[in-house]
Length: 134
Image (cartoon, rainbow, N blue to C red):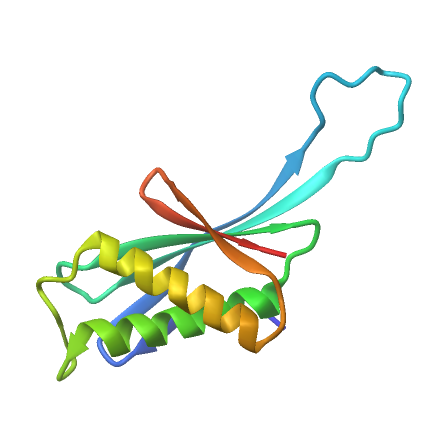
């Protein structure tokens, strides 16, 4: 399965902004011990409606890419945001960043429960909502 590069849901657009593999090395370990490096995969998406609305979401997967899980989460987040913030194919002007954050959290909980995998919202960093996928 390949990662979703872009997706259009009516007037709501999503594009893959960045995909990267990060190497995590343990700190303060003696040279004699054999420690394995760990890898973390980051997939960052830009979501927008073509005008005033813009959200960035980063999915973080530890150990393996988890592309199928990321795709399921992304599709459900898109669907939830569209369903809860658009009226007649037009975005609501009054939707706050806190409202988007709550929609993303609820969507993650629903999707991970429905598809039986672990995913959780971990906060924000540099303007991006962070989602950990296991």
